[in-house]
Length: 276
Image 1 (cartoon, helix red, strand yellow):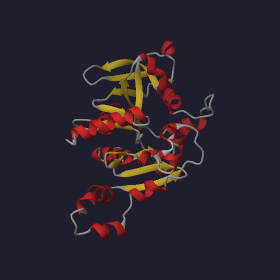
Image 2: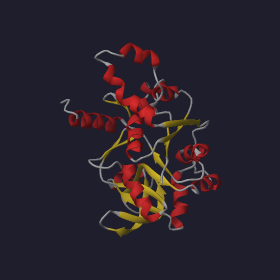
Image 3: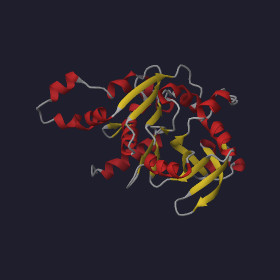
Image 4: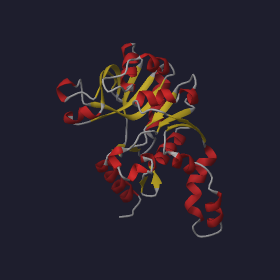
C-alpha cells in the first residue's frame, strides 16, 4: 500500500559545521554506515523499494553513495575486503532512487512539497535521516504502515519528551483511541511551543505516513513568521478534519541532528555490535 519513501535531505547541517561544509549531514556515519543508509534500510524493511530523495547544493555524495562504484569494486573483488561492499550493493540492487533539488531552504513542509513530482498521487512514507531509530522487532515505518492500514489517514510517530524541551518539536494534542497500541486521534498540533503553551509532552519525530492531499494543503498554507512552510501547519489542517493519527512507536530514537544525540547513537550501536 505504501510504495514510496521520501527523504528530505537538503538541509545545511549547521550544528555539525565545519564537518558538514563539504559532507552532507545525512552522510555522517554512525560507525561505518551513513545516517541516510539506516533510513533507507528501514524503508526496505517495510517493503518500500522506491526511495525519493530531496537534495540541495553540495549533496552529490548522496547520489554517489547509492550508486555502483566500479573502480572500488574492481579493486576489492576477490580480496579479503570484498565483503565490506556487500551490504550497500544489496541496497542498490533492491532499491530505485530518484532525486529532486530543493532550491530554497524554506522548511520541512517546503521540502516535502518539493518531492511531489517524485511521489505523485499516492500515500507515502517520510523519514528524516537525522532521527535515527532502533527497534527490536519491526522498524518505525513498518509500525506506522500497520496503523495506516487501519485508519487510512496520515500517521505521525510520537514520543514523550521532557516538558522543558517542547520548544524543539511539533507537539500534539489528542485523544487516546486505543490504549493497547498507543494511538491518538490528533486534535491539534503546535510547532515548537513554549512549555507553558504546550498541550502535551508528546512530540512528533521524523517518521510519517502522509496522504497525497497534503501537497495541496502545503501549496495553500501561509508561511510562518520565519518564512518557512511547516509540515506541522499542514498536518494541523488535516487533524481538524479528523484525518491524523499519532502513534507512540516502540523503539529507541536518537536525535543525530545534534552532537549529544549523535554521540549517544554511536555509543549505543557500538555496544550493540559488541565493539566495546
